[in-house]
Amino acid sequence: MKKITINGAGLAGSLLAIYLAKKGYDVDVFEKRPDMRIKDTGGGRSINLALSVRGIQALKEVGLYEEIKQICIPMYGRMIHSIDGQTTFLRYGKDDSEYINSVSRAELNMKLMNMAEQYKNVNLYFNRRCTGINFETNEINYFNEVLNTNENINPEILIATDGATSPVRVEMLKLPRFNFSQEYENYGYKELNIPADKNGNHMLEKNCLHIWPRGSYMLIALPNMDGSFTCTLFMAYDELLGGKNSFEYVNSPDRLKYFLNENFIDVIGLMPELEDDYFKNPTGTLITIKCFPWIHNKIALLGDSAHAIVPFFGQGMNAAFEDCVYLNGYIEKFGDDWNKILDEYQKDRKVNADAIADLAQENFIEMRDLVATEKFQFKKKIESELYKKYPTRFIPKYTMVTFMRIPYKTALVRGKIQEKILNQLSDGISDLEKVNWSLAEKLIDFQLSEI
Ligand SMILES: Cc1cc2nc3c(=O)[nH]c(=O)nc-3n(C[C@H](O)[C@H](O)[C@H](O)COP(=O)(O)OP(=O)(O)OC[C@H]3O[C@@H](n4cnc5c(N)ncnc54)[C@H](O)[C@@H]3O)c2cc1C
Image (cartoon, rainbow, N blue to C red):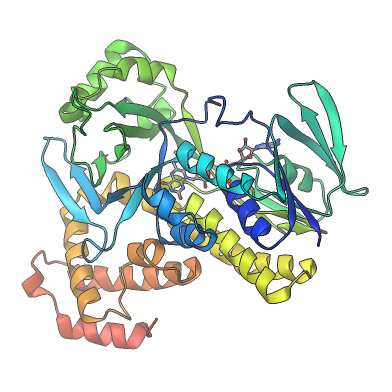
């Protein structure tokens, strides 16, 4: 059987190594950072992610889900914190059986690496930074960060799971007819922290994703196992765009205090290290990357290297894990015929990666702004009624993306149709009793088939 080389032992690379090892391939994984299980690599031990059905499917397939479940905190809905401190709970699914999971990125990555290393046909090489590719000779160049030496390898198949800044994709840019686009949001993000109380308990409701939507900016908080919350402040970079609500403007302790007192009064008391965190933590960037083709000869992109998306649907990792599910499915279908495997993989995934990229960008406006409006909350009520009445035809967009594994593209297309129906039904009213349910039936009959 062929030997497969993976570049990047992040979330997708470590998972993919397990899938391939299970199929009997010899797998070499190269990672630029030191082994995070031994040395804190600054990858953000406290940073957590929302894991949902698509990611869970992959973890189930490799047999790791039961272990990961132990480090997950279910989040059943959004807790909206309004500016006057009022809270409103908006459920994600139909009941408590539908939830997303807060999980530590580092813990998840380490567990994936541990499992990968249990296979004797997997080797993980750390401190190896990919520095280039020669497409003519198929040679990959590495710099050994410990020995300060250059090393070259000639993989039979290379799968690049090296993230949004993928060096392999950067090399592909030099190839003829390689399409590429990158779009930075004018927004950045800053990680902050709400520690546990003195008894190790969560200081906010534990089982939800907290949002402080403030129109053009927002704060969110996801629970951690140790009783703390990791918070992320999303805000405009430039004063020109965000005015006083921008990272550029909020650049001194006085301005920070003023900004927080004006906007997040109910939470600042829970963040003793706030000022330190704000000024010490870097401001992260938000990028959407689309490119094509993902394959050149036997070199393929997977995960963020192929399709980095903004985090507002909590789907980047889930989509990357779903790439692995599909790739594995094609290995099962086509055996060792890697031309076919890679061809089908990119055909299938590209259109869906583009769709989740668009969905994620749309969802930013929903999270930071619309969730706080009465109109949005009313439309959610209508949506929930329609879902009850037509469970196979009118399925909320959030449900299609998060609790189902239907193609993202389908969720995007149906979501747009449903949004129009909801706008029509909610126009000029604010009471469920006034909704024209027979019009709803006609619109659904006419526009939405069974899923
Ligand atoms: C603020 C934020 C919040 C997010 N929240 C969520 C969420 O709630 N749910 C969700 O599903 N997704 C979320 N995401 C997206 C998620 O983090 C990514 O989609 C996911 O990490 C992609 O996995 P990956 O393995 O493709 O890339 P990565 O996890 O970035 O891994 C890439 C690996 O490649 C290595 N590497 C890079 N360059 C080289 C090189 N030159 N040589 C060798 N190795 C290299 C890196 O060190 C890293 O280990 C969020 C992202 C951000 C920024």
